[in-house]
Image (cartoon, rainbow, N blue to C red; front, top):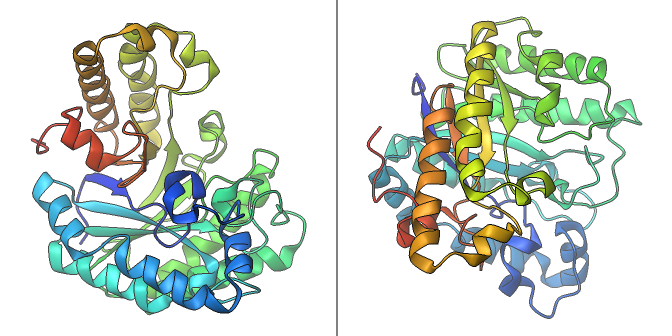
Length: 339
């Protein structure tokens, strides 16, 4: 039985590398995403990716998360972990180890299909930026469902599995009808192996304005709609710091309470990033610290009125507002979650 409410962190850049999150890893390497990184590594690719997957996040990190109060992690994966393809390097044994640590520390793993066959958007977090063919060929969607089945079957009855997220951030142009068909098929596949009492099935509405197109539209039990909220884009850089702090409470919370009536929802990604906010640049270090503390508290309160939340991400180089570990060390987040 998974936890009734999730207080979670994303383990991004572990099983699907996003270069912006760890520039030092790719220093001097001409790669924009995992696909080109694997191409550049060539014969060294297996050793390179194994070393990264073995060292980037370790058991001590799971212990730290448990002690802080985290009871769930969202684990973004590329399909090639299970189905090596082209230059990509597989590595299912590394995901097995992550799930084992989740079971050991009482943490629910949400395994997230972050990079699907055919790439579900133009973004580099699919593994291959600017490829985006997922909606154009039904074979890519069929292969994606095959990945979901492989995950559901392999980790059926696993004490570390809390949920399977069917697809991360599909492109806005993907028709709702296509996604609903895919999500419903994915749900049925997961349920062949995992009961609703143990494992949630998660379908994403992205961007969040599409929530009405998906929330409450799927048939079954323990289906959760996932959305992502970031306040770093242009409209938020023009807001005052105080307006940004109040936005989750004044604008998002009423929305959450309204949609809760139609079913469970989670905030699959959020951060303390405020982008190039002009007012923030004028604050002293002490003032910034207080602002980030208030921003974190407002988001945690609002997002906790849903089934749960997942901070993006556990580790990010040189961007403390995006790095959970750095936010804790800087005092932006509490030393321990009090519930």
